[in-house]
Amino acid sequence: MAERYLLLVDDEPNIVKALSRELEDWAEERALTIITAPHALKAPEILKEKGQETLLVISDLRMPEMKGSDFLQIVRDTYPHILSILLTGFSETNEVIKAVRAGIFSYILKPWDSEYLLAELDKAYKTVMLKQEHDQLTKKIQEELRWAGEMQKVLLRPSLPQSTSVEYRVSYRPVPHLYCGGDYYDVITLAPDRYLILIGDVAGHGVRAAFVTGILKAIIYPEYVRSNLTKKITPAAF
View 1: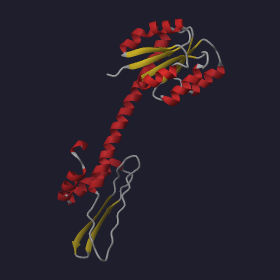
View 2 (view 1 turned 180 degrees about the vertical axis):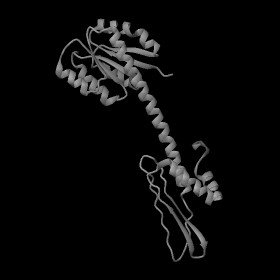
View 3 (view 1 turned 45 degrees about the vertical axis):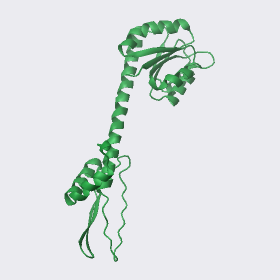
View 4 (view 1 turned 90 degrees about the vertical axis):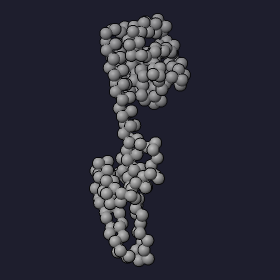
């Protein structure tokens, strides 16, 4: 498993040490490595190297050169997968509002209550993990839909008859974001200059309809389907 990080940002070394000590066992149980930044200007440099593996950020609000609210806005804009917790001993309403707009997950006052801090971190961590699972599942579904779309393109690519009296043209547009659809079309030669045109319109019904029309094509032209699938879809696709 790749290393994962919890970033602590505070310009007071004693606060950083106290937080690190407080969160050491919690982070170890979740296979997180604690990393620290002495101020908000240093933190983006750390995230350039470890931002993709960083899950959580706890940042102070009032720091020299850059306030925590401005830093957390950078985090949100650059690393939207990271969840942030604001830690401050100051009641600066405008800065807190800025931090909220920067998408902070929680807001904790100094001196913090250990039980509350760990509870908020637990909620943030679970939220991050659920989002990762959702993203992985979405990616898998998108890959399978793309494959289904490629398969349907092969199945719906008829060998159009050549005729001196009739010209055939076909345009296929799958359902956006689904990569496939439920439409079916075909042109079957019955006799010279005699053709059967098959059109099925079930657009909007997505993947199920796409497989139904694919099965229909397979029943009508089994040899055509087998030969074209062999040519157009590589074993890697399966």
